[in-house]
Amino acid sequence: MRERGVFITLEGADGCGKSTQAALLVDALVARGREVVRLREPGGTPISEKVRALLLDPANAEMVPECELLLYEASRAQLVRKVIEPALERGAVVLCDRYYDSTYAYQAGGRGLDEALVRMANALGGCGLAPDRTLVLDLDPRTAYARATSGGTDRMEAEGLAFQERVRAAYLRLAREEPARVRLTDASGEKDEVTARLLDALRDLWG
Ligand code: TMP
Image 1: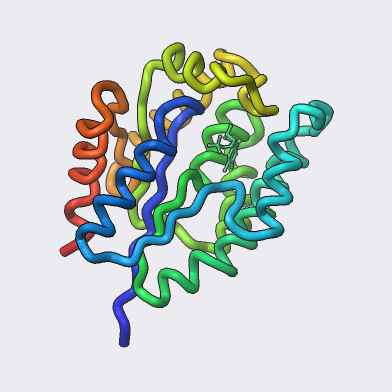
Image 2: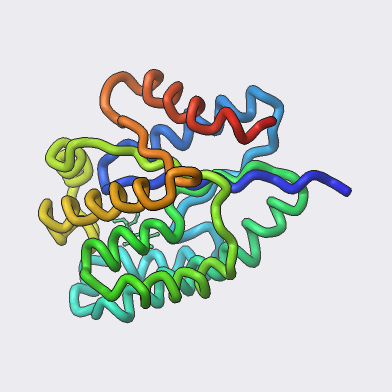
């Protein structure tokens, strides 16, 4: 039987440098001879990309938090069943830029939806699939927010700095609650230094 792959998720508030680090991590993992599937949430399937457009469009300012929660979960379920599970079954490393911890941080932490409800929704949207390791990039919220909004704001970023501070606080709680899976990583400093910290937090996964 072929070995199951490894499911890694990258998390953090907007502007923490996730996309840059995802690209650098992929390079580092490919150099180690692994098949790496890089994904981002919401997105990654035709249906999920359409849901992404709905979620991020500033014209949808009227969207209520419950609708938002369910759309993130709908996008996720499609991605898990169509892309993530098949990739893990063939032994690939799946690196996903955001996953259900974003829903915990943004919809429970940021929006204030009931935590137990969000966790149940996450169980459904994630189809019961938990990441093997979650890397949370942590950066001073002012620096991150300034970076995220320098080229304009999407519907989520338009919520402002106080929202991002609640998101960060939720990530910090998560890292305290689940230290084996969720690793908080200092995202300040040079890009290569941050990548080295992230690789360090993955080292025990390769056996
Ligand atoms: P991105 O900017 O990292 O591509 O993510 C899109 C936005 O969606 C970002 O502001 C975080 C937000 N988000 C949630 O609020 N809940 C979620 O479950 C996910 C995956 C993203």
